[in-house]
Amino acid sequence: MSRLGSAERVLTVLRRVVLTVFGIQLAIAIGMSLVDSYRRRGKKPKPFPVTAPTEVPVGDGTLTPYTYGQDLFDAMIEAIEGAQRQILFETYIWKGDEVGERFKAALAAAARRGVEVYCIYDGFANLVVSPRFKRFPPGMKVLRYPVYPAGLRFFDLRRYGRDHRKILVVDDAVGFVGGYNIGSAYATEWRDTHVRITGPGVWDLKRAFADFWNLNRRRRLRTSERPLLLETASTWEPQIRFHRNVPLLWMFPIRAMYIEAINRASKNVWMTQAYFLPDQDFVDAMKDAAERGVDVRLLLPHKSNHIVADWLSRGYFSQLLDAGVRIFRFRDAMVHAKTATIDGTWSTVGTANIDRLSLTGNYEINVEIIDPAFAATMEEIYHTDESNSLELTHAEWEARDLHRKFTEALLGPLRPLL
Image 1: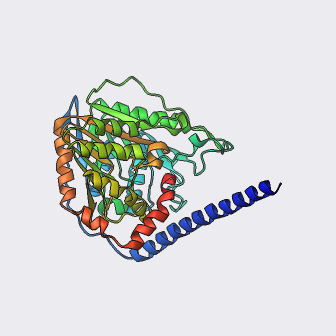
Image 2: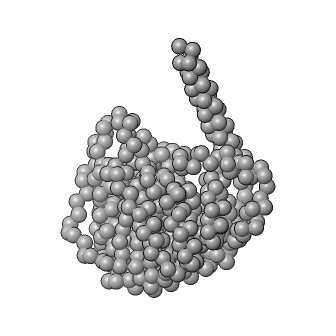
Image 3: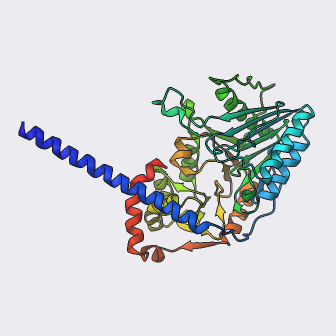
């Protein structure tokens, strides 16, 4: 009996220690976020170099990457204003500011002239947006992805994913996909990447939107949205493939797409990411590539909009630098792009970050392009970004202050949560 009592006391102490440590970690993370928010008040990002949009023929269509939000938004509005039959619009964040109002007005005007307008936005991501902005004309079909999508099935992890996609499809003529949310800050202050698509690839974007709409259109307390039916099957475009994470169906192909491409690399892997919190298999793929002589480069924000994510990502830097991976930090503005290009042939642009939430949690979409001309354009974009970045050297990293090393180690266990 005394042995049993001793074991119970030990377990009690262990539980208290674990809860205390986790509580300290959480308190530090919250404190860091609050301090960082206070320091950012009134500060505006500085101008940064961008690459002008360049249309690249790929297969039976074209791809045009955008690296400056104002250029992208002008092109998207132009497409919306030219719509004749149907508009499919999906975004994670839709701010109720000048840019957000511009999109809302253009979509409402299209609906008034008889265009079918379907819109999807994420309820949780837009909690701080005014409820007045989220009142739409009856001619627009709007699906608000719920703040809490699990309902009574709180135990079902498949139902907790956020809708992190950003898609626009106009008629069958043009589509847009990438990292840009809708808002004034994203127009001029953030460095992101979107791609404009024409040709057969547009149909794959259209199908991605329709599948999400039909999967989530049913509502418990209000009238359900009608299903979105596609008219015909798309033409196969072998140089362009779309990979969609669908947590409700337990489908997460984007992570495998990245790892397969990195494992096949023989010359270079140049990756730009907003947040970098991979699993160890992903890190090992990058390390193995660098150790076999591949030029592996990772470009991240010097300071992102999530300071805790910055600190957690630093936990991977030692092993990456030891393996020969070069790390660059983008200065003066938030780089929010989710792109990579490999061996002058393979590229991807999309919505998925390299973190657990994107790769094994959220609804995401990335386009994979196998084309040397487009890869050359993505390499040019990468060089432009690198010119505005500081390289983190191995010596600089090892010489960092002791309190930084301690904070990184203390926050490390939070990594799987992000």
